[in-house]
Length: 262
Image (cartoon, rainbow, N blue to C red):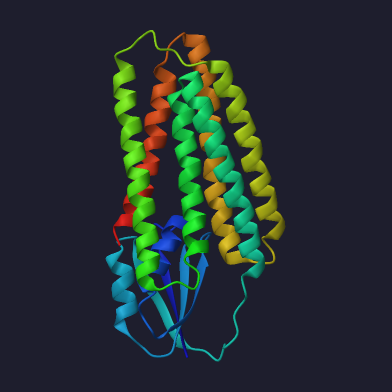
């Protein structure tokens, strides 16, 4: 068996990991994939030397570059049963807060909350794609990813259109109190996810590290919405809410496009 190590410059969250898994799934000679999100490295265990693996990784345009190839006697790999249970828990938390933030965003007229809810939904898709695709055919995996990608793009574009409409309505202020309170609860939820991931990091490093990075980005977004809520109050303007909404919608669209590139 051979072990080939790749440097993936733009791999920093589970979205890129899922893209790579889907791209390489059809290559029969691959035995196992190990991802190191922290150092942006991918280790591929395969039965025979082939240029198809390297070609497929380069086609993703994630800055992939082969570092080394060597023979190995390794035949056992870590099982991911504990990861699966943990990821189901995190998926559930993300989806629940998607519903909470979407409902609160509509009621409070906050684009920031609505955008953050879509980011939570996008997170749910990322974890859900991996969990639902386990044991499925490559066509089923690609179908699941495609549906998730298009759905995210449609919702994000609807959100951007609403942002443009609200820029022309100077009196359409969001409820900054609701923005701040709900975002604080969302921040706590993401903090719980980080705690659970951190607690399990030593057991299942590969996927857990990836999820840690992804959830850390959610914490930053939560802080952005909270800051926007205070700025709405201090400036007596809806512009901070709209600006944070644009930023989050753009992030959601970027993630969806990466999935659809397959």
